Image 1 (cartoon, rainbow, N blue to C red):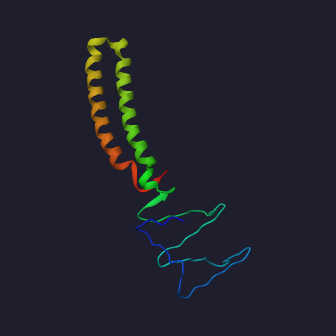
Image 2: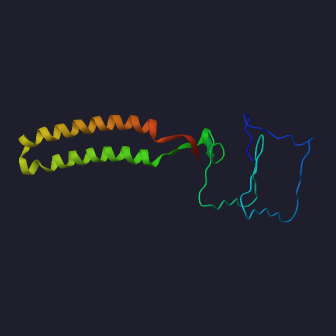
Image 3: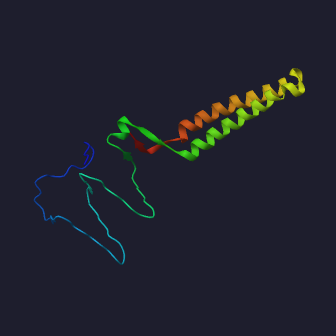
Amino acid sequence: MRFDKDLYVPKLRYAGAQVILSSDRVTIHSEGDCILIFGNKAVAISSKGYVDINSEGTTINAPQIELGLQAKDKGEPVTKATSLLISLGQILKRLQDVSQALNRLSETGLGEAIPAIVKATEVLTSTISSELVNMKADVPSKTTFTR
């Protein structure tokens, strides 16, 4: 379990009321509805082996999510795939336009092709500039970090 200086650190010698269960195996089962676990200051799940979560969907709602120890400090933000695909799609479309304009050289000759090539490269340059700004703002997650 990880405890940063800004997070709650439990008292090792606890003086309040508490319940301790210790056994070779503990099973909690709710057949009709759900199991709820609440902690006023923290909830910790730890295992020397694996921790498995099996469900039809999982939501983690927190202002900061770290996948790996010290992920925010030593890792990277997770990439938002949809935002990245949109930005890369815009750039690739403009590259395709430049490629098609260059391919028309053999059909139309240099004189007729130059205006289309110039226009396509101007649009490509503008698209790259704006998408680079968009990618810096939209692609990296500000919430989820990984190592």
